Length: 237
Image 1 (cartoon, rainbow, N blue to C red):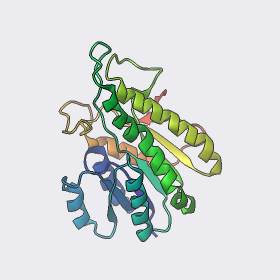
Image 2 (cartoon, rainbow, N blue to C red):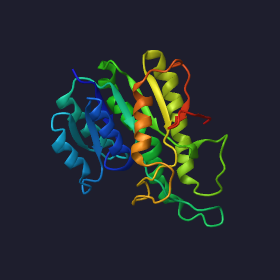
Image 3 (tube, helix red, strand yellow):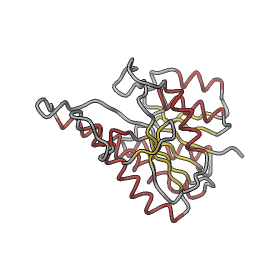
């Protein structure tokens, strides 16, 4: 029987590259599709008809997450791995040109609360799975101890909140057999602001290759929560 994984934010960029990685690893992949107008997942579905299931999914909405759970249950009795990758960026400037902070609430809803919705909703399936692995794509932007930024308040704050959420989940669920992966993908040429960035150090495929290795392999110290980047360097958070 194939191992099962749910990947959020799978339309493009890192998420789409992760879908490809796990299909190659022969997983049954449930790919969260937020932007149906992007056709790459649909094309991939033609190639992996039996191994790829597309889930209409907005992690910021309870109803959408619950509907995704129902769709997964139609294909699988359990879930081995959940990869929380969906995220949005942008937002406030520096303290002199702060802008409308109310717009930042959507970022918190997606980046910080979205993964909590997903874990909560998929726990019954994860409980029946053998893997019990929870993976979270975070960022150095959320690290308090190595912060060097002077602006863009909301995005870093949303990732700091995500890191705390993962820590709380770790304290609750690690003793119950769950393992955790907290991942900083590096400076990726991503689509998080709407279009693909021309700046960045890594292509999505490069970070996805490192992420899939990190997510699937066992660590020597599963009882310690650490954030690793795509070069397997530990980041304080």
